[in-house]
Length: 377
Length: 83
Image (cartoon, rainbow over all chains, first blue to last red; front, side, top):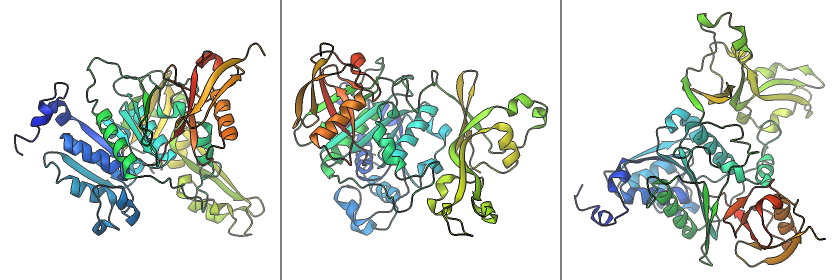
């Protein structure tokens, strides 16, 4: 590394190259914004960037993704982006994770980052990342675009607990849009792919630059308590608005979380330890799993179905609503029970030494949210 | 009606703007729905409401009486989701 690389940064009185170099950022999504975020973080000389994406490069990505080329079509997006971004500054440690962050990134692991940047393309993933950042106490920057606007929101769950979260101002219509893609309980609806919003490199580059700057808190004073806020930029008219986001007492995500949650990394095994036997009161503890599970499956006409073994105690999101059609009578008469809340005793009974197919479980213990973050099985 | 509140509602691109007298019990969600309906805003987009005078967002369930003062300017902004 040349000693001259960061000379211009060092001439800026509010820019600390040491602070940037020590920062560790996770970027979720290697699409248009993700490319721009990684580009800016690499150019700034950030210490480490982990990039998550489960998608492959398609030809239409090439108009908005600075690191992708025709030769990358079919390759994993995260790997393709990291390969080229590594050429920008060899001192920046870049890592590609090909997969869904919900499957591969633990809450405890997320707590180790200075900031998470959400550059995904749907509400479900943004809600999930927000939930994880709330639990982990990790700062979240949420960046999104359309063909005209760029929006960058910052939620300082790590630096200033207690502010608004992403869901505090999410309109009901967004939940309605998600509900169109899932039947009640969480089965995916067939032929209901997420709507694709047209975007351009212009809005992506503005969102990516502002997201990177916000994540690193460039220009912010150290003693400032950052409020949750949204910057919306109109790339055609050239205007922008900065909006303070206050906490919503009725928020679906952070309601009741008055203190930072306690995160306990734990094995995903449900056999009671010897010292727990006889502690029956503990078995009544209610746990809310990260993922709804299928807990009942029978046909209103045919009764019990042997096929139930394929679905019971598995994640509802693994299936679509085709399983509501009875394999015996071919009628849409299957009664599917899907639940997310369980008493500890029921989980012990259902799963024993098997892992629960969930990422984490939440419990309200002594008025405080406790997150049992499951180790990978 | 005497207890109505006068304010301005506009879209983020400021192509639509109206001076209105509204019931203070109306919520942020009510204002957004009225804007979508009256201005035929694209139905495939979600919207949020911002009090442009104070620079604070109005939550969907919040009433105007709590979040707005007479004469304030409310802005209907798109909720962006693409990445």
